Every structure is written in C-alpha cells, then in structure tokens.
Amino acid sequence: MFPLTHVFVAEQVLGQSNELQTIGAIFPDTALIFGLNWHHTHCLGEELFFFIKENQPELIPFALGALTHGANPKGLDYYGDECYGLKKEERGYCFQKALPIINEVQKACNLPAKFSWWKAHNFIEMAIEIKLANRSPWLKSQIEASIEKYGKDELLNTTLNNFYSRYFSDVAFDLSVLHHFITADQINSFSLSKLYSEQLWYKHQIEGVNKKEVERIIDFSATLVEGDFNSFLTTVIAKIKEMISEYK
Ligand SMILES: [Zn+2]
Image (cartoon, rainbow, N blue to C red; front, side, top):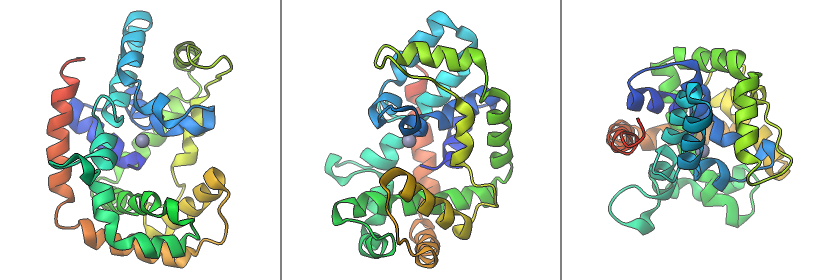
C-alpha cells in the first residue's frame, strides 16, 4: 500500500496518532534505499518490536506502526498483497482487484510480462491512496511533520542501525529520505503517475512509461475499488487490531 493508507490503518488499529507511529507505519517500504530487502522490513516486525522494547522502549510507537504495515505478522501488506479471503491462492485484495488491468498496465509502463500483475496491483493501491487523500487530507501533512521531526533523529536511526546490523554489517539509516515516498504535490492521478514513473526508473531502470495512460488507468482503478475498498479496510483493521493486541 501507499503511505497515506498505511498511516490511516495504523491510526485506526492503534486508536491514536503520533509522529513516531506515523514514521514507523511508512518505514517498511524504504528497504531498498538502505540495501535491505522486502523480507527484512516486512517480516521482522516482531523481532524489531522486542528489540526496541528491550533497548529503547520510548520508541515502541515506531515498532507498533511498523507492525501494522508488515506481512508477517499479518499487517496491512499481508491482506493487500498476500491473501485476502478464504483461499490462499487468491492473493491479496490489490492483486485480486488488479486482474482486469494487467495488460493495460504492462503496455503503459513498458514492463516485462513477469512484472505486469505485480505492478498492476500498485494501481489499485494508488486508487485507494487518492480516495484516502480526498477523505482525510491531513494525513499527508501528518506524514511530512513526522519525517521532519524524526527523519534525522539520532536515537531512532541508531536503534535501527543496531537492529539491522544483525543482518548486515554496513547499514546506515537516515529516515529523512522517506520524503521521496511522498509527492510534493496534491495527491491525485496526475501527481501519482509522475511519482510512479520515477519509481519505476529508480527501482528497475524502466523507461518509456506513458504517464498519460498511467493517469487514466489509476482513474479507472478507482472505479474497480469503489464498491468494496471500505469493507476491505474495515475488515482488515479488525484483524490487525487482534494481531497487535499481543504486543500492546
Ligand atoms: Zn510495504
């Protein structure tokens, strides 16, 4: 999911909002920047929580925010990406919803076929992100304020260095880079098509993206989620609340 969606879900799950929790909720998607992989930031939430609890308990809201984001234990990305519904093979909500747009996304983004379903699910995520940005416009400034306050925080960055140095010897966190994940403009299909094509270049060196087409498919994706994205969010917020109760 995209940042606003993660912050919204973290607030609903934890029943409050604060800057540490907000930056924790968006942190897992920075893995690549710090030389980590998806598994390190999405599947070690429990270890990170206990590490922080033991060493820097004042940072617990960060760990809780990250737990609501991850895939194991089951946070929002589990239900959005991995599995939503009864059958494991059905994948998460965003992958299921992306089935009708796979071919157009592949063409618009100039993608190799093996990337197309994976990248198409991002369009569903962007459509949800825009809906939340319209509904709760303050989420974006909340994220900006949390990066401003904690991006360069020495205690937080050092604690993450200490935790991840168990896996890599040369990690060096600077969470102020999180601002790359937030568009400077208002969040809509135009600004996200620009941000998304930049990310395709940064992550995969993919060029030749048709931004106008990307914008159109994001708008079309909004019609695909219209009927049930609210019930998806309500259902998973309840499930994540249950998961997080073991840590609070
Ligand atoms: Zn994620």
